[in-house]
Length: 276
Image (cartoon, rainbow, N blue to C red; front, side, top):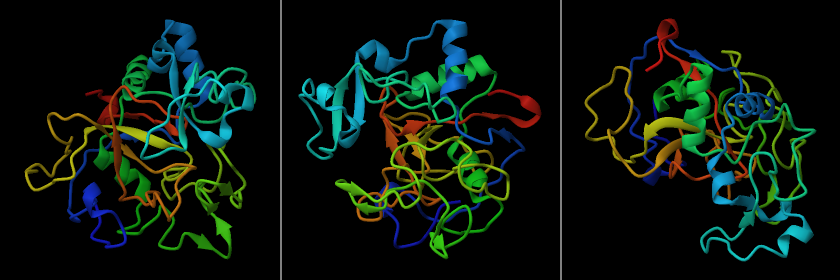
């Protein structure tokens, strides 16, 4: 698990490379879709945190002109993220947008808390980081990507990330400008789709970049406390010039109540279906 590759982000805690042991578990073949999340909401009446807060982060070029007039805030460090009123999983780009033609796309604008609520309803849970990384590697040892070390082979793309000049122009050479259907691209050797690219995926662990205090290498679950939850896999907005985090060892994090237009999740079950 992890990587000592110097081309990564040492401050993210990608290394050191270390060996862990995991019990058997089941993992979803792809991210939770809009359709499946809709089933959950219909059954429970659940309202996501973005719906309750009344806004979420949307990538600037996706915001319709009429909606852009109501946008007044964006983070200084990442000005391409706009605070869009009424943006949520049903309306990914804000008022006037919908998911009618995206039922088989990954649900986005879901917080870690939202993902846990869905997982509990589905009789599952979020993966630990170690479970996620084991799954993403697909049986390959210390390769950069779920398919090997080369991002493209013969100009063929294997994931949905940004091509072109970030954040101004996406050439869409992989075929997509935003989210892609969850079964896009060839699965890895474990039959899992889009383990990198498309949308970031929440993990159960609290995030820490320091692994020096870890003394458990069997079914590790991360720190016992923290402020941010771990995210894995990168997204359709990742580009080598800014966010080269679509590698299997790459990591990031966000607060448990945060939501964005490129953040989703998939679920797991413990060995023999045990939920813990």
